[in-house]
Structure formats: structure tokens, C-alpha cells
Amino acid sequence: MRILGIDTSGKIASVALTDDDKLVCEKTLYTNLTHSQIIMPMVDEVMQNSGVTFDDIDAIAVANGPGSYTGLRIGIAAVKGICLGSSHIKCAGVSTLEALAYNCSAFSGRIVSVMKARPNVIYAGEFQSDGTTVSRISDDRVCAEDDFFASLDKSCKVMLVGDYAATAKDKYFCDNGNVICAEKNMLLQRASSLCLALEQNPEYITESAELEVAYLQATKAEKDKAHSEL
Image (cartoon, rainbow, N blue to C red; front, side, top):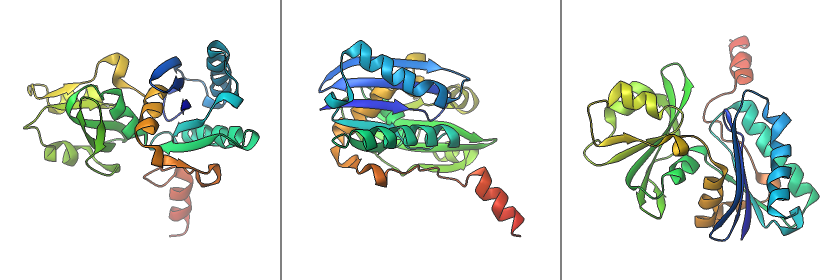
């Protein structure tokens, strides 16, 4: 299966193309630009460099959250637009936290994906890897960081990954050799990991009309509306 991966869930913009067990091309950029300015040009570049068109793509895997509200909407909208113009292309929303765990799929042990949500609050997901296959241990959640890390099982090897991983290692586990942090080339979002997650979980494929963002917490607009109704 030839899969296009698109991640716009954070500061990273990432696009990848895989063809069965081969990573054909990947472009990843840490940027302060709006994803709407750069993600489709990145898609075009990856596809041109790979010598493919949308006619050659079987499916698109996109990060559907958690993450940046605006970034996630841009990625989802881009995929819906592509599928509208190329009706044969399937699509799949993949958890940002699960895709981060696939960055470290070669690690054998517990993988904990952690992203900053707001002060003292994180997005977190726990996974297990046998060195090849990643399986989910817990649902993605938004939670108080102190409570989450205090309850984390540290009796086995734990790999931290995500934009809050290095901070968490220094803050909570600096003297614990069982808890390690992913290397910088695997620390943040990579579109190729979305492709890998879809390859191992083809049941994630859905219709583009059903593709939705999983924010895990209320958006600012929803919070403002709720506050105004009090």
C-alpha cells in the first residue's frame, strides 16, 4: 500500500510517502509559519521528488490529535480536499500520541508519549513495543502532569517521546536510569510514523466525511462560549 502521511499537529510540519515496507521520501520542518502556508507545497515537493501523483496514492494518514487546534484543522481539511478530488484515495486519522510512539517502535518496553497542553497539564498516552509492533496500553488523555508522572510505573524500561519528554525527564526522572528520553531525531512528530501506524492498523481507514479532530479538551472558542453563558 502506498501511503501519504501528513502531520500538522504542532510546530512540526511533516509529510512522508511510504510504499509497502519502504520509506520513499520524508520532509519535516520545525516552523513558526502557519501550516496552511506550507503543508500543500511540502506535499507537492514530496510527491514530485518521489515521481508519483495522487493517482498513485492508496491512502493518506493524518494526525488527528491531540495538538494545535488550528494545525489539526488545517491537516484534516487538506486531506478531505485531496480525497474529494481523488475519490479512490482512502484516509485515516491517527492519534498524534500513537504516531509518536511509532517513532520508537524499535525500542522494547513501555513508550510514553507526552505533549504540552497548557501550564501544568499534558496530553499523554501509554504504549508497549516488542521492538517491532506497538500496542496501546491506555487511552489518550489530558491530565495534570504531576499526577501522571507520579503514578507512572517506573519498574520497567520507559521511553519518553514528544515535545514534553525532555522536560519531564529532567524534572521528574533525572536520577532514574529506567526512564529515558527519545533521541532528538525521533523526539517530535514524523509523518512516516503515521504511515507505519496505518500499515499496522488498516482498520483505521475511514471515509473522508467521517474524518474528525480529537482535541481531548475544549477549544478556546468553546471555553469562551461556556464562560459567557454562566
